[in-house]
Image (cartoon, rainbow, N blue to C red; front, side):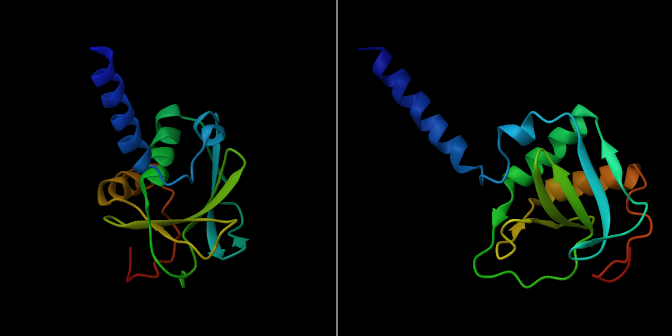
Length: 144
């Protein structure tokens, strides 16, 4: 009988934790040893010579966590050209990021846009900035 409350508590915790995930990131992305970033000219067109491979486990986890915690916006997305294309464990995402906000979109569902948590956007921006990956981007939001 004492096991029943423990089992119920575990089920509750699992439900709460799974509700925090949006389903964009799966096991294949979590288990990948590399992600590839490209700066974007516009949708469907990457800038030449901007391919960057990220193999650092912590950086990959940073991207995976940020994407998996993003909140889906209601309605159909009408957005500006993305900053980055992110090839990640067999999936492709578009990424917009600034110092305190960001968005992500699954290439296979361009009608849905997800907003990053502020902390995640800040951490991604900091990482991209420290790796000089923001250099040469045209900021659509008013200047970088």
